[in-house]
Image (tube, rainbow, N blue to C red):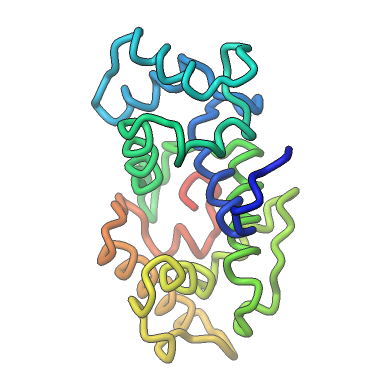
Length: 213
Protein backbone atom coordinates (compact mmCIF):
# COMPACT_ATOMS: atom_id res chain seq x y z
CA UNK A 1 0.00 0.00 0.00
CA UNK A 2 1.40 3.37 -0.95
CA UNK A 3 1.52 5.61 2.11
CA UNK A 4 1.99 9.39 2.36
CA UNK A 5 5.69 10.26 2.65
CA UNK A 6 5.21 12.51 5.66
CA UNK A 7 4.36 9.56 7.89
CA UNK A 8 7.17 8.14 10.01
CA UNK A 9 7.45 4.37 10.41
CA UNK A 10 6.06 4.65 13.93
CA UNK A 11 3.12 6.74 12.76
CA UNK A 12 2.32 4.19 10.06
CA UNK A 13 2.06 1.48 12.71
CA UNK A 14 -0.29 3.69 14.71
CA UNK A 15 -2.44 4.20 11.61
CA UNK A 16 -2.51 0.45 10.92
CA UNK A 17 -3.45 -0.26 14.52
CA UNK A 18 -6.32 2.23 14.41
CA UNK A 19 -7.46 0.79 11.06
CA UNK A 20 -7.46 -2.76 12.44
CA UNK A 21 -9.47 -1.61 15.47
CA UNK A 22 -12.27 -0.50 13.16
CA UNK A 23 -11.90 -3.31 10.60
CA UNK A 24 -13.78 -5.80 12.76
CA UNK A 25 -13.97 -8.64 10.24
CA UNK A 26 -10.30 -8.24 9.31
CA UNK A 27 -10.91 -8.20 5.54
CA UNK A 28 -8.69 -5.17 4.94
CA UNK A 29 -11.50 -2.65 4.43
CA UNK A 30 -13.70 -0.48 6.66
CA UNK A 31 -17.37 -0.47 5.72
CA UNK A 32 -20.34 1.68 6.71
CA UNK A 33 -21.55 -0.98 9.14
CA UNK A 34 -18.16 -1.08 10.87
CA UNK A 35 -18.13 2.71 11.20
CA UNK A 36 -21.64 2.53 12.64
CA UNK A 37 -20.49 -0.20 15.02
CA UNK A 38 -17.65 2.01 16.27
CA UNK A 39 -20.03 4.78 17.33
CA UNK A 40 -22.53 2.28 18.72
CA UNK A 41 -19.81 0.69 20.85
CA UNK A 42 -18.93 4.10 22.28
CA UNK A 43 -22.56 4.79 23.12
CA UNK A 44 -22.83 7.51 20.48
CA UNK A 45 -24.93 6.04 17.66
CA UNK A 46 -24.80 8.04 14.44
CA UNK A 47 -27.63 8.38 11.90
CA UNK A 48 -27.23 6.39 8.72
CA UNK A 49 -26.96 9.43 6.46
CA UNK A 50 -24.05 10.78 8.52
CA UNK A 51 -22.31 7.42 8.29
CA UNK A 52 -22.70 7.52 4.50
CA UNK A 53 -21.34 11.07 4.35
CA UNK A 54 -18.37 10.03 6.45
CA UNK A 55 -17.66 7.05 4.22
CA UNK A 56 -17.95 9.11 1.05
CA UNK A 57 -15.51 11.71 2.39
CA UNK A 58 -12.72 9.10 2.41
CA UNK A 59 -13.82 6.65 -0.29
CA UNK A 60 -11.70 7.98 -3.15
CA UNK A 61 -12.24 5.02 -5.49
CA UNK A 62 -15.99 4.94 -4.80
CA UNK A 63 -16.20 1.24 -3.95
CA UNK A 64 -18.29 1.91 -0.81
CA UNK A 65 -15.52 0.92 1.58
CA UNK A 66 -12.31 2.43 2.96
CA UNK A 67 -8.93 0.87 2.29
CA UNK A 68 -5.87 1.33 4.49
CA UNK A 69 -4.44 3.75 1.91
CA UNK A 70 -7.60 5.87 2.07
CA UNK A 71 -7.66 5.58 5.84
CA UNK A 72 -4.28 7.36 6.11
CA UNK A 73 -6.02 10.55 4.99
CA UNK A 74 -7.92 10.64 8.30
CA UNK A 75 -6.02 13.62 9.71
CA UNK A 76 -6.68 15.75 6.65
CA UNK A 77 -10.17 14.85 5.46
CA UNK A 78 -12.12 12.86 8.01
CA UNK A 79 -14.79 14.47 10.15
CA UNK A 80 -13.67 15.41 13.64
CA UNK A 81 -16.32 13.17 15.21
CA UNK A 82 -14.76 10.07 13.65
CA UNK A 83 -11.24 11.07 14.73
CA UNK A 84 -12.48 11.60 18.27
CA UNK A 85 -14.22 8.22 18.26
CA UNK A 86 -11.07 6.48 17.08
CA UNK A 87 -9.05 7.99 19.92
CA UNK A 88 -11.67 6.89 22.44
CA UNK A 89 -11.66 3.34 21.12
CA UNK A 90 -7.85 3.16 21.27
CA UNK A 91 -7.97 4.21 24.93
CA UNK A 92 -10.53 1.66 26.03
CA UNK A 93 -9.42 -1.59 27.62
CA UNK A 94 -12.61 -3.30 28.78
CA UNK A 95 -11.93 -6.98 29.24
CA UNK A 96 -13.79 -9.66 31.17
CA UNK A 97 -11.59 -11.84 33.31
CA UNK A 98 -9.98 -12.41 36.70
CA UNK A 99 -6.73 -13.98 37.81
CA UNK A 100 -8.57 -17.16 38.74
CA UNK A 101 -11.27 -17.45 36.11
CA UNK A 102 -10.90 -15.58 32.82
CA UNK A 103 -13.75 -15.18 30.37
CA UNK A 104 -13.26 -14.79 26.63
CA UNK A 105 -14.25 -11.16 26.79
CA UNK A 106 -11.85 -10.12 24.05
CA UNK A 107 -10.72 -11.82 20.85
CA UNK A 108 -7.65 -11.02 18.78
CA UNK A 109 -7.82 -11.18 15.00
CA UNK A 110 -4.62 -12.06 13.18
CA UNK A 111 -4.55 -8.52 11.80
CA UNK A 112 -4.67 -6.99 15.27
CA UNK A 113 -1.98 -9.33 16.57
CA UNK A 114 0.24 -8.30 13.66
CA UNK A 115 -0.43 -4.63 14.30
CA UNK A 116 0.34 -4.82 18.03
CA UNK A 117 3.51 -6.85 17.49
CA UNK A 118 4.75 -4.53 14.76
CA UNK A 119 3.94 -1.45 16.83
CA UNK A 120 6.03 -2.81 19.71
CA UNK A 121 8.87 -3.71 17.36
CA UNK A 122 8.97 -0.21 15.89
CA UNK A 123 8.45 1.69 19.14
CA UNK A 124 11.06 -0.15 21.19
CA UNK A 125 13.56 -1.22 18.54
CA UNK A 126 16.31 1.05 19.90
CA UNK A 127 15.75 0.24 23.59
CA UNK A 128 18.77 -1.70 24.93
CA UNK A 129 16.55 -3.42 27.49
CA UNK A 130 14.44 -4.91 24.69
CA UNK A 131 17.24 -6.64 22.80
CA UNK A 132 15.07 -9.74 22.39
CA UNK A 133 12.92 -7.86 19.90
CA UNK A 134 11.58 -8.10 17.24
CA UNK A 135 8.49 -10.08 18.13
CA UNK A 136 7.36 -12.49 15.43
CA UNK A 137 3.86 -11.28 14.46
CA UNK A 138 3.00 -14.60 12.83
CA UNK A 139 2.68 -16.65 16.02
CA UNK A 140 1.91 -16.26 19.72
CA UNK A 141 5.24 -14.62 20.56
CA UNK A 142 3.41 -11.39 21.40
CA UNK A 143 1.63 -12.95 24.36
CA UNK A 144 4.83 -14.50 25.72
CA UNK A 145 6.84 -11.30 25.21
CA UNK A 146 4.72 -9.28 27.63
CA UNK A 147 4.73 -11.90 30.37
CA UNK A 148 7.65 -10.45 32.37
CA UNK A 149 6.27 -6.89 32.39
CA UNK A 150 9.32 -5.19 30.86
CA UNK A 151 7.76 -4.43 27.47
CA UNK A 152 4.53 -3.25 29.11
CA UNK A 153 6.44 -0.80 31.31
CA UNK A 154 8.47 0.42 28.35
CA UNK A 155 5.35 0.95 26.24
CA UNK A 156 3.76 3.03 29.00
CA UNK A 157 6.81 5.29 29.09
CA UNK A 158 6.80 5.44 25.31
CA UNK A 159 3.20 6.66 25.38
CA UNK A 160 3.56 8.99 28.38
CA UNK A 161 7.26 9.69 29.01
CA UNK A 162 8.58 9.44 32.58
CA UNK A 163 5.44 7.79 33.95
CA UNK A 164 7.68 5.05 35.33
CA UNK A 165 11.13 5.55 36.82
CA UNK A 166 12.88 2.93 34.70
CA UNK A 167 15.35 2.25 37.50
CA UNK A 168 12.47 0.49 39.25
CA UNK A 169 11.93 -1.99 36.38
CA UNK A 170 13.54 -5.36 37.04
CA UNK A 171 15.55 -6.22 33.92
CA UNK A 172 18.17 -8.86 34.77
CA UNK A 173 18.08 -12.19 36.60
CA UNK A 174 14.31 -12.22 36.73
CA UNK A 175 12.55 -14.33 39.34
CA UNK A 176 8.88 -15.01 39.95
CA UNK A 177 8.92 -12.22 42.54
CA UNK A 178 10.61 -9.59 40.35
CA UNK A 179 8.35 -10.45 37.40
CA UNK A 180 5.34 -9.96 39.67
CA UNK A 181 6.75 -6.55 40.66
CA UNK A 182 7.13 -5.55 37.00
CA UNK A 183 3.59 -6.60 36.12
CA UNK A 184 2.08 -4.81 39.11
CA UNK A 185 4.09 -1.71 38.19
CA UNK A 186 2.78 -1.89 34.61
CA UNK A 187 -0.86 -2.36 35.67
CA UNK A 188 -0.76 0.44 38.26
CA UNK A 189 0.98 2.80 35.83
CA UNK A 190 -1.46 2.02 33.03
CA UNK A 191 -4.30 2.91 35.34
CA UNK A 192 -2.49 6.11 36.38
CA UNK A 193 -2.29 7.37 32.79
CA UNK A 194 -5.97 6.77 32.16
CA UNK A 195 -6.16 3.24 30.77
CA UNK A 196 -9.26 1.41 31.93
CA UNK A 197 -7.91 -1.84 33.33
CA UNK A 198 -10.81 -4.08 34.30
CA UNK A 199 -10.38 -7.35 36.19
CA UNK A 200 -6.86 -8.05 34.98
CA UNK A 201 -4.37 -9.51 37.43
CA UNK A 202 -0.61 -9.81 37.15
CA UNK A 203 -0.96 -13.59 36.87
CA UNK A 204 -3.17 -13.18 33.76
CA UNK A 205 -0.38 -11.25 32.02
CA UNK A 206 2.34 -13.56 33.32
CA UNK A 207 0.53 -16.50 31.75
CA UNK A 208 0.21 -14.56 28.49
CA UNK A 209 -3.52 -15.18 28.16
CA UNK A 210 -4.33 -14.01 24.61
CA UNK A 211 -7.80 -12.66 25.39
CA UNK A 212 -6.42 -10.45 28.18
CA UNK A 213 -3.19 -9.16 26.66
